[in-house]
Amino acid sequence: MTIPVFPLSSIGLLLIVAAIMAMLTRRVGLPYSTGLVAAGILVSFMPNRPQLPLTREIIFDVLLPPLVFEAALQLDWKRFRHELPLTLTLAFVGVIGASAFVAVGMHGLLGWSWLGAGLFAVLISATDPVAVIATFKELKGPKRLNMVVESESLLNDGVAAVGFAVLAAIASGAAPTAVQVIPQFLWSVFGGILIGGAVAGAMLLVAGRTEDRLVEITLTTIAAWGSFLLAEHYGGSGILASLAAGLMIGNVGWIGAISDTSRPHILAAWDYFAFLANSFVFLLIGIHETRIPLNVLGWAEAGIAILLVLIGRLITVYPIVGAFGASELKLPLKYQHVLFWGGLRGALALALALAIPNNVPEKVAIIVTAFLVVSFSVFVQGLTIPWFTRKLGLLGNRKEEEKPEVSA
Image (cartoon, rainbow, N blue to C red; front, side, top):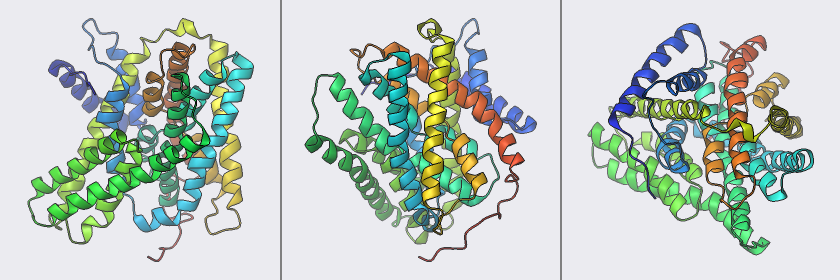
C-alpha cells in the first residue's frame, strides 16, 4: 500500500480553510460538509492550488477509520441492538434492491455493459457513512431517527464492498461461483466484526493497566486504524471492524478498562480527529470536482443516473420500513421521508469508483457519474435536509417519538 505524502503547506492551507468554513457554516446555518466542498472548488481555482491526491487508499486507509470509529464510540449499544433488525434489513436488502434497479436502468437507458452498470450500481447504492454522519450530527432531531440513519450507513458498506469485490474480480477475468461468493460475503461481514472486537479487546486489556489519558487515547487510535487495516488486509470489512471496535470501547471500555478521568479527554480527542478527517474528505472532493472530464457524460445521462439512484432509494426504503409497521420498530412516516432524502452519497462511492479495474470500458464514465451523483447529494440533498427536517417538525424536538429505554 502506497499512500502519497501531503505537502505540509497544502495541509496547512486546508486546515485554515476548514477552520474558516466551520465558523462560517455554523454562523449562517449551512451544512458543514456542503460548505467544505464549495470551499474545495474555490481552492482548486487558486493560482498555486494544492496538488493533493484523491485515491482509494487516502479515503479508505487514512480518512475513513477515524470517522467510523468516532461515530461508533458515541453509539449506545442497547439502542443500536434494539434497532438492529430494521437497520440490517435496510443495509442488506436495501442495497441489493437499489443496486439491481440502478444496474437495470443504466444498462437499459444508457447502454452500459452489465458489468459496468453493476459496478456503478453497487458503489452508488450504499449510503456513505462519511456524508451521512457528518450531516446528521449537525441536526438536532430525534435520537432514534439519527440512530437509524447513522447505523444503516455504517452497516450497509458490507454488501456494497462484497458486491463490488465480486464484480471487480469478474472484470479481472475470474468466474466466481456461489461456493466462492457466499464464504467471501460471510467473512467480509463476520470476519470484520471479529477482528474489530479482538483488536478492541486487546487494547482494553492494556488500557486497564494505566490511567494515563495520553496512553489511553493512543490505544484507542491503534484500535481504530488497526482494526480497519487488519480487516481489510485479511479480506474483511474495515468499516465493520472499526464499527465493532468503537462499539466495544464506547460501551464496554467505559465500565472499567478506561478510567473515568480519561473518558472526556478521549471523546474530545476523537471529536477532533473526526473533524480533521471530515474536513479533508470534503475539501478533497471539492478540489477534484473541477478536474473531472464532464464531456464524458452528457447532462441528460447525468440526470438519468441521479434519478435512478433516487428512485432506487425510494423503492427500497418505504417497503422495507413498512414491513416493520406492525412491530415495535415501526417508524413514523416523516422519519421515513428523512431516511429516504437523507441517504447521502460521498467519499465511499468515489473510493470504490477509483478502484474499478482499468479493463472496464465504462471506468471513466463511472468515475464521472459517481462525482456528479455525489455533487447532487452534497449540494441538493445536503443543503435541503435541514429545511426538510424542520418542515416536518423534527428539528429541535429530540423527545418526539422516542422509544423507552430498552432492557439489557
